[in-house]
Image (cartoon, rainbow, N blue to C red; front, side, top):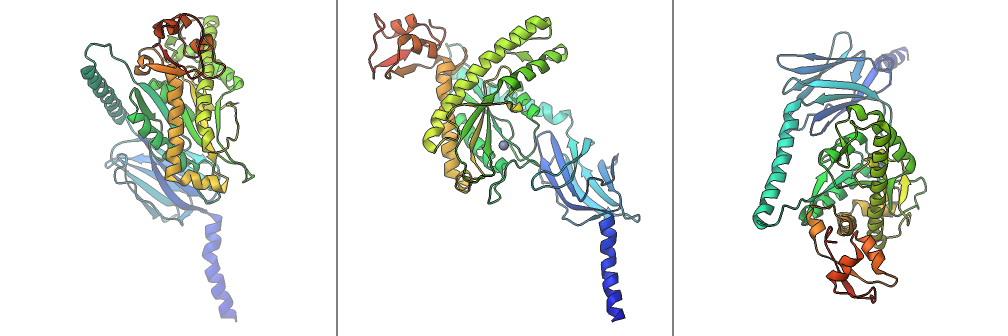
Length: 449
Ligand SMILES: [Zn+2]
């Protein structure tokens, strides 16, 4: 009897020690274009650690004080250009040492993340890529544009060059941020990325448009990084794709959001506060050399125009989403989503469906349904730009037509397509303002009237 007791005691002893220390329960890596993120699941927020660099060969060391590794250690992806290998060892003082072997000298950032959804406390180590890759990707992007232009130049030797519309497609969440979770465990970040990729493929095939995938893998981007990438690429439109969630699993349907008034005014304040050191242009105008009053007026004009454009684009998308199922909200909604805050890029956020609703979760996972959603968004984008293409784009030069519906008037049509009434009259050889239902009107190109 005594023997048995002592055995239990001995077995129990190591666990007491472990409970007193910290555990690393898992290690993951996420590869983004300009960084590799290494995430450690730690058992408590009070985990003590230090991170330091070693050279020859380059590596980063993370020492966790009095810690045991209970989870699996991952291998970095073979194509990872920053991280070569991860290994761990227990030191004599019971510290856990994790060594990240690096391809090259690398800067890093480290911080603790609080529990969120399925994850607990985490230590994040970001390995930042140096300038090399950034330049390469810029050069590659430049090449892409150049080759597109040169094709156009060959096919249109006489006409001036018409540029493509750049459509920024932002799949929500990513990496450590899974977004909403469906009842079957579906991650929002995965299904919205699938829809985003399908939309990008459709836009790529569309003459006069070019897609820009804001996130093109499973990694985290801050909301500012997302809008900044759109600005850097001079996007003509920004579409953020998400899936909704609600406690009541019966709630379903799509909704489309644009930036609210509150969101716009707080963003205006930020631009004005930072205008001295902002190299960005707002709608092609620099704010940094304007006095505050003028800068405020210019910013306000740009935001008002952008809001109207976002609203019109959102309405076109709702119209296309409607036949796919009941809409959650019939009208374009407004909210202070940070990702919609570009003052001069029409921006919409589409909640494609409710991932919390079992039937919609199933749809969101379904490849065919993803394509249907992507097609609806493409149609919305197309409809919007047929009426609102910026000058100098292929879309602005595209011949447009309008079929007269009940209640249409010439002045309203002219307004909608941003052309003059007289240009519609002359294009269609009309003498007065009389039109009949079903009549097909040619709409002149922008700037023709
Ligand atoms: Zn979301």
